[in-house]
Length: 326
Image (cartoon, rainbow, N blue to C red; front, side, top):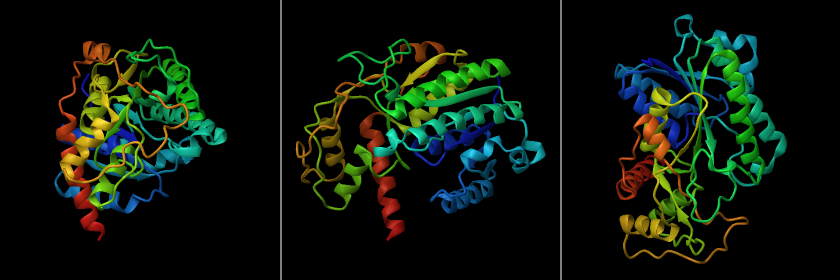
């Protein structure tokens, strides 16, 4: 199936921006739905203007998550753009800290996902791709790769809501005749990622000459660069099997302390890092790795970018961002 026009809701993070770039490179017309209250709205307007000057079909539409169910929402779309091929639903509120257990907020996220499906149907959408999370699995058995068949047992409101959103949106898509793909994304890093993630806190801390503190870092972890995550989402949109769940990761692990050392070495081999200065988080997952065999079989996706390559690109992006802000 040839995909020509996509909506990305929740495009301001590492995955969303990488996906936007990837689709534009493939000559797609991309519509970004972004909250009017987003702190990144001005930079996105500048980004839209820059891309359109380059002749690329990028359009920014401002909308709060709750607006999707409003009858007037369709009016924000020009008539010639009221037919899309695919909806990438990456939007979610409350992904970090205590907000993960804000049950009212997480419940609203489920409703927002269902509202997105119904609105996508108004746009004659053919494929709905939702971004779930490894949090849907809880703590998988030690040394067990996560596959679509791994039992789900989420241990916080965020994981519970992601699981419910995926299952409910699958049923609704079936009723509406939309192909449904749900992904469970492990750990992705790259430009535009939040500053509080392990990777970004390490990068910014070291760039600022600090000695960032970490746990012992003995967790075996699967990290995937955002550009590869974007390629995986595209592959699933094109060739994924209706109703399937696809974990997204690299399929390989290293110890967290190894990743931290690699980040340090890429910035300053002599810099100090505080390995072991922090305790492990409550219910710390000690092994996290995606089984991508089914994803590869169905879609042909394989990661292309090593952590060494990806972290160099990420560090250079962070340097440019700091220079621009100074």
